[in-house]
Amino acid sequence: MTNLARWVFNLLFTLIPVILLGVFFVSISVFLRDLNEYRNRQTQAAEARLEALQLRAIGNVNAQTLEQTRKILTQRLQNIGVRGFRIEVQDSRVTVRLPELEAAQRNRVNALLTQRGNLALQLVKTSASNRSIGQLQLTDLEPPLLTNRDLDRVQASQGESGRPALTLRLNREGAAKFARLTAANVGRRVAIVVDGRILIAPTIRGPITGGMVSIQGFSSQQVVERLADLLQTEPLPLRLELVKP
Image 1 (cartoon, rainbow, N blue to C red):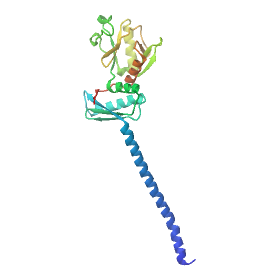
Image 2 (cartoon, helix red, strand yellow):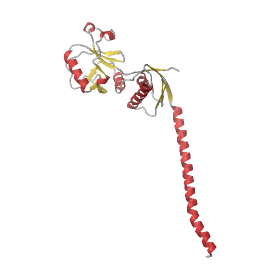
Image 3 (spheres, helix red, strand yellow):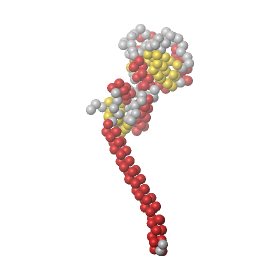
Image 4 (cartoon, rainbow, N blue to C red):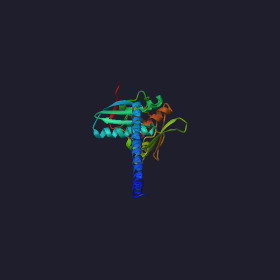
């Protein structure tokens, strides 16, 4: 082999791997670019399928309360198994972008978005002890003795009779307060109030200790489940009102 032929051979031997490597990196670059464009198209298509709910914040609206509201709503939707949603806050507006949901799940979501979730357990005044739930007013109740701050966990369950029940697990302070409350007020009624609405007012049958409270008397299992959904998180710091199209 002549020197020229040997030189050409060595040059090709050196250049071919470099060329192949360059082709490989170009191919990878093109593949990643196409993959990124595909993902962007998929994301845009998915977002186009999301339904946007507009809510107006009412109350002490500022950046802190809006961010707290966003976090609470996110936790509420995650707790009931909703996935693929987005929550955006701006000024006094909250936009919730939701995937397609079945009617029952949609109603469940709407309730969680528009209810604050303030819980209060309040003794019924002795002067109103014989009034029905429909007749009771907030003015018939004594100041709150237990609130959301006393809760550790809430869940829907069934009572001993098989009827729907809301089970409250109280924290240490709440359990102590409720034990004193029930021991000192056997025979009196205690109202369960959520967002200013009196739901039921059962009679205290005896001291309740241990921090587990099973409340019965609700109209249906669905009502109990909705309450459990709502009370699993802290209350919203402001009220949200659905803006109609």
